[in-house]
Length: 274
Image 1 (tube, rainbow, N blue to C red):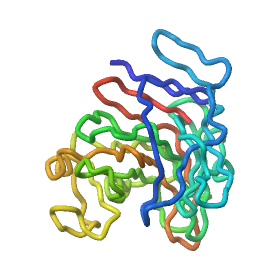
Image 2: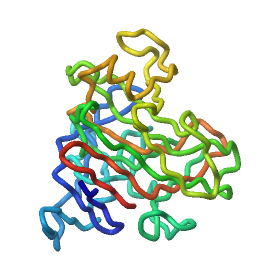
Image 3: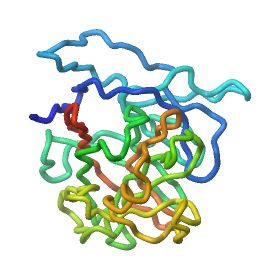
Image 4: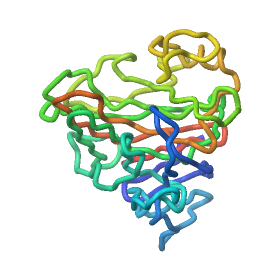
């Protein structure tokens, strides 16, 4: 099946939108991510069963409201810039730029810059509840500019999502795909990261130990091994955060550009071009 595309400035979706919830890789959060400004934009078109939606929904927004009222009134069905430290969407955390270089899709990319301990994501909740065994495509493209990276050249945005290993829909932290564990990070060039790679892609776990097997969370497991150890694993249904995260506790920080994200199941494959 030919992949559907999310064209920069528009969304091209294929019925992959599901309910979503909150996310944090540290503690069970109390806020509910989403976008108070999320709405069906004017000009939505139906092109042969493919829904094209204006990118008005791309940037999430959060207005802090006194507890216990959640800071969001609705769940996002698109993408948003998300702060992993405050557990909130924030449209000021990233920007859209031309280039750098020659992106594979379109003419620009989403750019995120961090410093110190900042941890920011280009995130979505639309794949919540998807069984890992049903995912057929999972990849993204990044660009590491040497000008914006004064530290290690191996830094690159990594993929992470809230995982439900045992169909309990409880907070069980995240699975994490780190590019430098899966190849060479090359600066000043676009590179695609295949987070399945025929089952050979290596993943870690954000908890202290992997459930059931008891190995340290830093132990790398292939995608195939994860499916064997956790055949019922899925992206958590009510807390379905999936993000491309930029930021670690580096004092010097770095800049990262993200061109595209591909997600596929037997129902179809969607290419999101930022």
